[in-house]
Length: 244
Image 1 (spheres, rainbow, N blue to C red):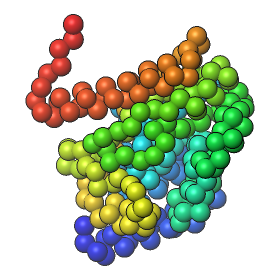
Image 2 (spheres, one colour; image 1 turned 45 degrees about the horizontal axis):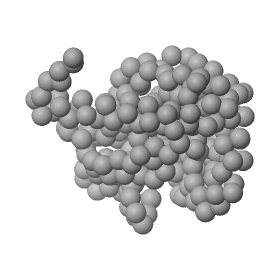
Image 3 (cartoon, rainbow, N blue to C red; image 1 turned 90 degrees about the horizontal axis):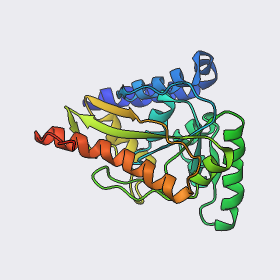
């Protein structure tokens, strides 16, 4: 993408963020979709998130845009590390989404955070969590940590897995990944330079938390999301999955 077009995308993003109070009059989902449009990303939703009360929304984590894509499909309060609060642009997005921040350096604070999430879920709101605990490049992924799933059990609400894929020209891309010590601005610059970026959000069936442990919920959600990636890889390679 030409430098001028990249700059215009950054300006458009800043305008959307600054105009958040006005934009939110159209609804939170509309605003987050405006953020994606500003950076040149097309949203493709596969499946349907039927209306539900409290629900724990979980998904794979590769990019700073994950939280934006999730809210563009199903507005939800998020759980994020405390450092996100101070990030340029994305910190404002997180605050607007009603994010619950956690200090990952203080494990003693985790039970209180889980209880806070459970309270939000009992109140009928959706809460989004990325259980891998950190971002991955997209080609690899991490195991889902079970702690946040306890909030769904305590609140008696289901889990909604979402599988996110970032695609350019019909092929998965790692260009949007946000890893290691990289700054947010570096990741943003690489993202706005992409032409034809498409974000696929696969909305997967609800998982009932009744009779589950937090570990079993984490495993089921992780397997559900991984299956989408494996099926898409088979399709891209020309392989046809065999169902017994």
